[in-house]
Image 1 (cartoon, rainbow, N blue to C red):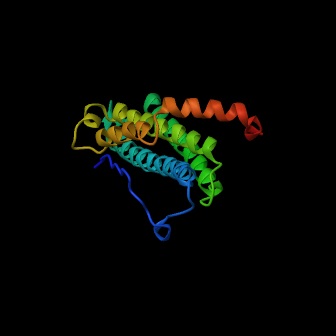
Image 2 (cartoon, helix red, strand yellow; image 1 turned 120 degrees about the vertical axis):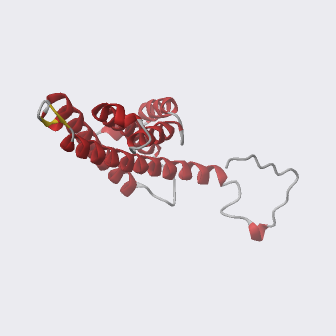
Image 3 (cartoon, rainbow, N blue to C red; image 1 turned 45 degrees about the vertical axis):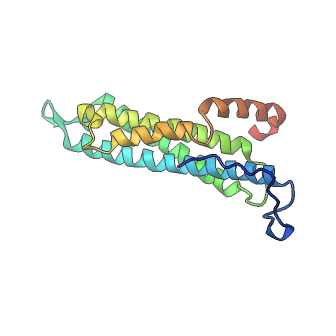
Length: 179
């Protein structure tokens, strides 16, 4: 549940102060970095489950006398989904290990990893729906819910468009990050 809290003329005794005075912006920025890495990790879970379900379905479903995982287009969906998942996993692990919980300064990669992984998870879920056909679209199977969850992650923690803006801004100021 989300709600607005308003504190007017509220005095907080110094003994109840959390962190340093006027340090809330730094805390908020650090929390955004952590949130974005967390959302990227959630995206990995979505993609992994979609790959598992898509793979199992492609092994068990037959068409023209053979499992559909023997057909080129299904192979492409599975193989590309797996490769993108593994790339996202590497990016999440790298970004999470570089995260300094005592300061800010990893905005470029926290934006980048959330942008990449949220889009990747939605694309993998879309591939799973495509491989599973009508079954991928019904509530009996997980992938229709996973697609909705992945779409929500693209919005939560900052929209993809906001991440595009942030990444371009940060690259303009820190081009050495790509070396």
